[in-house]
Length: 239
Image 1 (cartoon, helix red, strand yellow):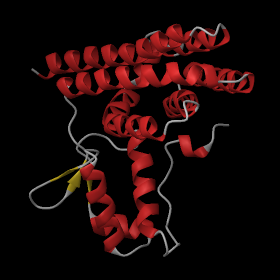
Image 2 (spheres, one colour):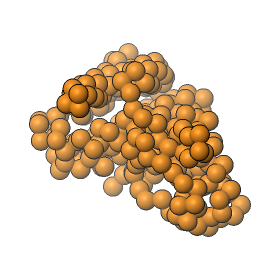
Image 3 (cartoon, helix red, strand yellow):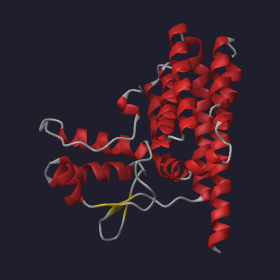
Image 4 (cartoon, helix red, strand yellow):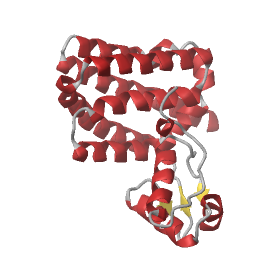
């Protein structure tokens, strides 16, 4: 099983008074990053306070903090909501991800050990099994676990912070794709979702850091292209 912190799980009550704001923020941030909430999903302070079993203040501060990171938007009425998805923003986020994550993977490469390769192979096997089973939630968790295992090896808090923010802003797109995953898997996309991950593992074994970065970038680009195709097709249907 994957570490639960990589899964899209339920929000849990917060009992610690000392770090209540941080705990509310961290849970909401992780859920957003994992694609737990669809675009235009709204959040009321009252409902979240009840869910977390806290006062309104830590929830309000967490929502403001997430809005400052562009993970949420705040309406004129003060309601927080997940931003709508657009092709232009998707391309902008993907472009930034390709630059930052490709470079981070290249830095991380020489630091990865045989134990890391074994761990990545295990995650890859889980990802493939999830695709075969049509389990989009586990696929999403495995994808995140795979990438972040590599990125953490770079040993750069600054780069990790940038990557986490990009994944945070990608949350609505992750959810959008996840909601359509069952149809994609039935259409024969099973292998395609893990091809670049397999290439990344092979590049690490070969100590080919340029190939590792290239496979990482290709993985991000393929997801972007798939999402753009879906957005375009659904836009054509709606018009």
